[in-house]
Image (cartoon, rainbow, N blue to C red; front, side, top):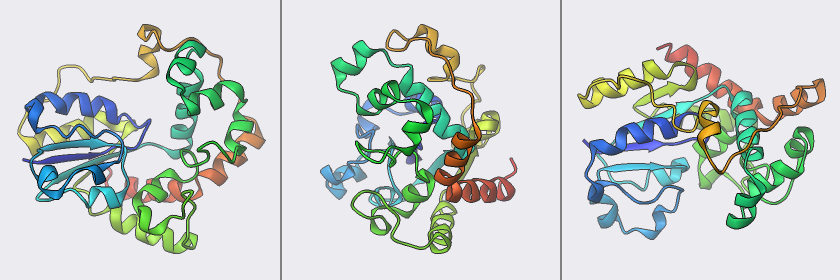
Length: 243
């Protein structure tokens, strides 16, 4: 079975990816892990059996079928906070060595300033990320801004989300793994593989301890604004797929 993991960052998708990877031979795994499927011909893409990338819906549609598709959603405000804290935990040494723009911004700025930043690639990773990714490049402007009304953006986003075969949730990863394992006919892992969870940060030499800010009313209001569409998408999906 050919499989594609539509991976939203900071939802637990890396744990699922690391579980799925050994099910395929190395030559069957598409090496693209971001979204640049444009660099492959349709014939090259058809030669792979497993895809896992931070992509948008338009890129997902570039992959020839038939295809079993999977995605993972996380409560949107928690996802944004997790992204900020993960980036902020990067050491200055690794930020400078790899020229990591997102972690540099998180390291330099407090949470409120980070959420309000409007340059250097932000707020593309924080502003209604589910909606923009599900809309795909056809419905986003050159900087990722929505070119549809909120109502229409939600309609198209939900329509596209519902074409994905298995929709799971970070808050119930065992249920997601169960669905995937049943579909693929493989055994459940004996222990849930939380690959990049903050539980394992102390073992990662690229990360260092950092204090988490109190969520003030101002910060919460900014999080509400940045996730106004994503929270509707997430809540609708939770009601439709209770586990």
